[in-house]
Every structure is written in C-alpha cells, then in structure tokens.
Image (cartoon, rainbow, N blue to C red; front, side, top):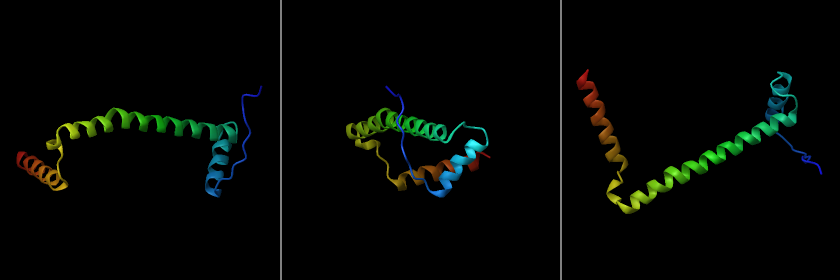
Amino acid sequence: MRSTQQFSITLPHEMAELVRAKVASGEYASESEVIRDGLRALETRDRAIEAWLKNEVVPSIEAVKDNPSLVRTSDQVRASLAEAYKALQRAR
C-alpha cells in the first residue's frame, strides 16, 4: 500500500514563485518537499498554540473567575506603567 497521496493544489503566483525559489536554491529537493515542510511548520505552530491555550490561557481565566480582583482595567495598567517609567527616570 502506498504511503503517500497525490494532491493537486493551486497557489497564488507569489507562493508558487517562493516554492520554486526554495527548490532552485538547493534548500529543498522538490516542490513537494517544500510543501511538506510548510505543513510540518503549520502543525508545530498549531500544537504550540494549543499548549499555550491549555497551559496559560485557561489557567489565567480560571484564576480570574476564582478571584475577580486580579483583573485590571487598561487605565490601571497605563497608570502603573507611567508610574514605573517615572520611577525609572527619577532613578537615573
């Protein structure tokens, strides 16, 4: 049984030229290799986003639900940044 499947895809001219350039430079042996590497990068990015959501975003949301006083308005954030900047300027 074949371990690959053939696809026919349509790319914008700029992307097609990028694929051709990658092969022409010797960085990749074929157009298929360029596309496979791009899909691997997409898969890696998707896994990283999922991990970030699971490990950082969801726990942060849960923490705010448990303790709403953790929430700061944009005005509060701006004020604390301005105060930190002033303190830094005074220290110089």
